[in-house]
Structures are given as C-alpha cells and as structure tokens.
Image (spheres, helix red, strand yellow):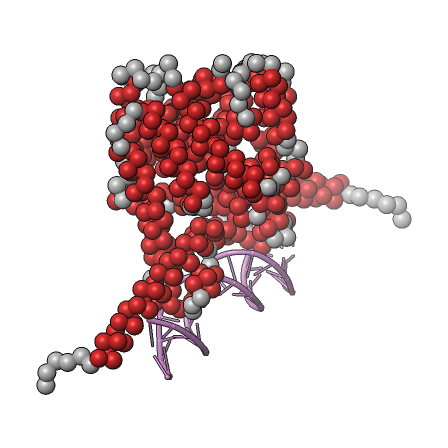
Length: 217
Length: 217
DNA sequence: GTCTATATCGGGATAGAC
DNA sequence: GTCTATCCCGATATAGAC
C-alpha cells in the first residue's frame, strides 16, 4: 500500500495549523493587554480567556502555566521596543542630534505602548533577575550609549557630565510622564485626555531642548 | 449602688488600650511594608500577619477588610511625604533656590521611602480616582508651584518654559531613578548597592544643576 | 482582644469527552 | 484543538471559645 495523504486530509492539516496559529496569537495579544493593565499578580486567566474569546483551558493547552504565558508575553512586549531604539542608538550622528532622535523615537514607542513601562517597573521589582536576563538575552546594552556620551565629553561637544546621570536623566524625562499619566492628567489637566496627549506630543521637543540646554557648554 | 470602677479594672482597661494601640500600630507598620513591596494585588493577609507577629483574624478584627486596611496604610504612607514637601513649597525664596531645596528634600524623602512611588504608580493605575481623592483630601496642590514658576518666567528670572513641563521634568528626574532602581542598579552598576546609593546621593546636586542649567537665560 | 477552627470563594490547573 | 466538569489550593472572611 502506497503512502498517501488524501486531499481533504491536507485541507484539515492546513486548517488545524492555521487555527493553531490564530488561537495562539490571539491568546498572546489578549494576554498582553491584560498583563499590561493588571501586572502579573493582578491578571486573571479567566479575563485573558474572555479577552481572547476562548476557554480558560485553552490557555493551559498552549502555554502550560500562567507563568510561561507571562514570559512569552514579556518577550513579545520588549521586542516591540528594540528594533527601533537600537537603530537609533547605532546611527552615526552627533550626540546632540542623536539625543533628538532618541527622544523622538523613544517617546513615540512609549506612546504606542503606554502600559509597558509601568509593567516592566512592576515586574522588575517582583523578580529582578528574571527580567534582567531576558533583557540581556535580547541584547540590551547601555554600555554603547554611555561610551558615546563619554566621547562627546572628551571631544568637548558637551559639558562635562557623568554619562550615567545623563542617560538616566533622559530616560526619566521620557518615561515618567507616561507611567504617571493617570495621576498627572488628573492633577494638571482636569483629566482631559486630549489635552494630555497634546502635552505629550509637544513634550518631545521640550525634552530635547531641555536636555540640550542643560549640557551645552 | 454607686458607680465604681475598681483599681484592677482600671489597670485592665489601660492594658487593653495600650495593647490595642500597639497591635493596631504594629499591623499598620507591617501592612505598609508588605503593601509597598507587593502592591495591593500581590500582598497576602497571611504575610502581613506574620510580619506583625499576630494572627490573621486580628487583621480583620481591627480593619474589617483587606481593602480598608489598604486605605489606612495609604493615608499613612503619603502623610510621611507631605509636611516636609509642603514646608519647602511654601518657603519664600527665589525659584532657583527653591528648586535646590525641593530636589534635596524630595529625594531625601524618596530615599527613606523607596517603595512608595512605585506603589503609588501601581495603585493609581488600578483605581485612579480613589487615590486622587485621598490626595485632594490631604491637600496636595500643584497649582501653588505652577504659579511660582509662572511668576519667575514673567519676572525674567528663568527662561520662558511651560511650568507644567518644568514641574514634570523635576518630578521625573527625582522619582524615576528610585522606582527603576532594581533595573538601573543592575544595568549600570553590576548590582552594586553601595555604588547606587552613592549615585543617588550625588544625584541631588546633579539634578539641581541640570535643571538650573536648562532653564537659565 | 486574641486565638483556633471553619466557611466561602476564586483562581490556576487537570481529566476526559468530543 | 476545543470544550465541560472538576480538582485543589490558597486567600479572605467569619464564628465562637477563651
């Protein structure tokens, strides 16, 4: 008897594969939403299942546990960040120009993924080494930008500042207004969402100017 | 029969009162620790009871529910912040001098309560209006400092900057290095805690200078 | 006020039918 | 692969003895 796979068997296989990918992906997207909103501890498997439009058990079928699902989601989340940021950091331009580009690009990323930073801050406190390892595996390298700042100081392009402080200053100015949004929007803008969006948009330029003023000789 | 309270009855009452206060207070302190570390969702009543060295049921005896306990703790936490900060904001000095004092005072408070900011950021996202109401009840008023910045701009003491951006810039530079500590300490200082403490101490001056440079004419 | 015991509930995880 | 039903544990909360 010849090995033979009938036409509709192939169809079934294709269908199952497509379904699998769809479901798996839908789970990931749903889980991302919920994890980002609630954090690991606050997220409920039921809520994720609802958001994905499937049964709770299916979550365990695809990702054996809540913990595994969480890890998958986290990798996905930071991979949205990386390519854009990396390309900016690797670009070969003057330090002041690079600061402009970085602030612009980084704040755009944050505006598109507003829940990611707080999520990272939460989980990094819950279990610091786990997430740090993932960061390292994904090739996050602060050394690169620190050296650039260092060289810019030596060449006299900017004031003599500690590169680590400068890096944290820039990150602070970009990230904090996003993670503190629920509070700041209420306290400064009467909870007017549009006004705060406008504030964040104009903030790209404001931060760039602020930093460049602070470090120019 | 005359109304009469015997001597040992008085002793008992005093004892009970003292014990009550002690226990109540011990619970508050323990709960503060746990809530700050784990957030509302991650905190466990058992863990709080252990930390206070008492039985789980006693938590419910003094504070009817986890939620009520949480609110009590939160009020306590922000009341540690307020007096110091308020007095700085109300002091009558030049804007640059006030920025120095604020950064110094605020970062000291943060160094003594390093878990508070992330805790606030977490809970403010979980239930924004609840915490905001507490802030308002406690008399937190950004308007005050905004007006001072405004006047300083008009008087020509500092560059023409948007007061709201300036306020958020200062807050960012102070708060972010504390909430992101677990990550930054590992990425920038090989997880050397002493080195990061030193970094934060010198940061008070660094931030002051950074901000003043950025806004001087 | 403080403890032990227990009720009650919700969530993660598994078994098994289809 | 997907569903229903169920297990099991842990956590909040209550009852009641002392």
